[in-house]
Length: 296
Image 1 (cartoon, rainbow, N blue to C red):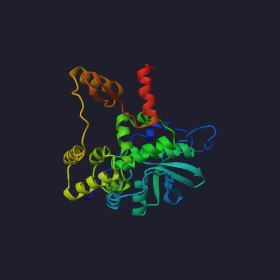
Image 2: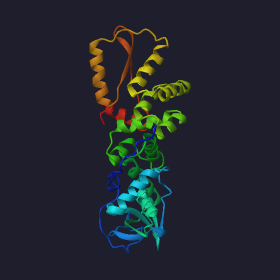
Image 3: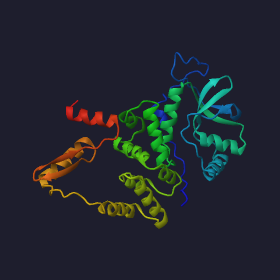
Image 4: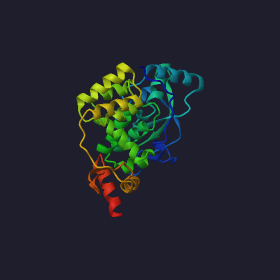
């Protein structure tokens, strides 16, 4: 199943990091300013090198051709962003599709904003800008979130502020990385969607995940059909008999779930006795939940 090609919509992630101030392009002292900005200038394509921190590794050829046609007819509406490395030396921060499409057209120059930034800033900008794109697959987004946590050292709360996404949304993406690599590849190639992946995350055994994945592909199962299949798979396992959950406990459980932002679970052992389980998927999530109960 071929992945649908979507029109590119530029995100606003960079504007949350880059300040829209205007200074003289002659300012090149990174010690006195975090970013050096200037008017939009036309930079020769031969002076530009790609960003080594670019999270994206695959670019759809047909999509690039469509963009090239648009640039030929309308020009480049949104300038790319470059990191000024030295005299006649620039590194791409954002806009690699526009850069590639311009080279495809044989253009000599491209309009660009110039910035000065260190490697840490460039990595953060590239990852945030990548997440804000509209044509990414779920695994690309999940890996960008993971890199923001591991390499930029952002917490889920900080990422939420950077990209304008709820912490629960970020957690859902990160959970996709628990899937078997074969399934992740299938998601990247467009054979299954994020809904399928989210359903399969709840399958513990890798062999069961792969079995469900193969059935999704061969039978072209919808997300709902996949969820039903997983329920049947789980029903074959002999469940422990549990006591019925009284309404007062159900109501209290809903209040707890709303308070922590995740669905809490309960397991009844006897009448009016049981255990409450609160899921978390990272150290940051655990500390956030702990603060909620402490009232910090």
